[in-house]
Image (cartoon, rainbow, N blue to C red; front, side, top):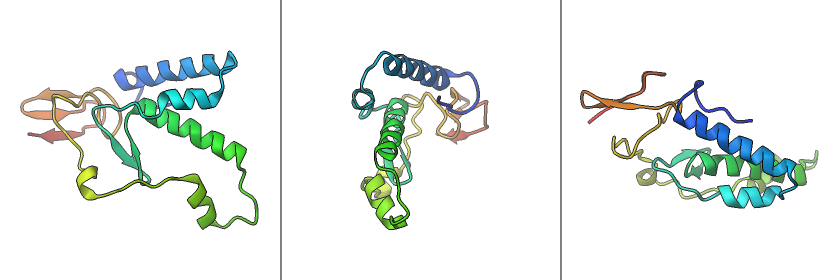
Amino acid sequence: FTTIGKAGGNAAAQSEAISRLISLALRSGIDPKDVVNQLKGISGPNPTWENGQLILSTPDAIGKALESYLFDFEHPVTAEDTPEEVAKTRFTMVDSSPSQQTPNYSARTMTTCPDCGSDIFHENGCVTCPSCGFSKCD
C-alpha cells in the first residue's frame, strides 16, 4: 500500500501502520474523504517539495496521494481534455520560493533520511544515513 525507502526503519514502520489503519477504516465503511481530511495537514520536522506541492509529513503525503486517487476516480480524463486542463484541475500549486525549499538538516529535528526515509544518525559532527549514504555535516 505504501513504500518508503528500504525495508525497516522508523519511517517505514509508521507508514505501514498508517496504511493498515486506512485499510481498516475503508473496509469498515468510513468515507475515504474523512480519512483524507484526518491525514492532510499533519506536519512533521522536515517538510519537502514534490512536484510543486508542499508535503508536510508522511501522513500528509499519504492523505494527498489518497485525495489525488479519489479525484482521478471521480474525474476521469477524457480524450477531449488537454494536458494543460488536466494539470490545472489536478494540482494546486503552492508558493515555491527558494527560501521555503531549503531543507533543515538540524540533527535535533531530523530523524529520517530526506533521500530514502530510513533512520539517520548523528556521528562525528555529521548527520548520516547508513542505508543510502546520505550525509550532511555541521
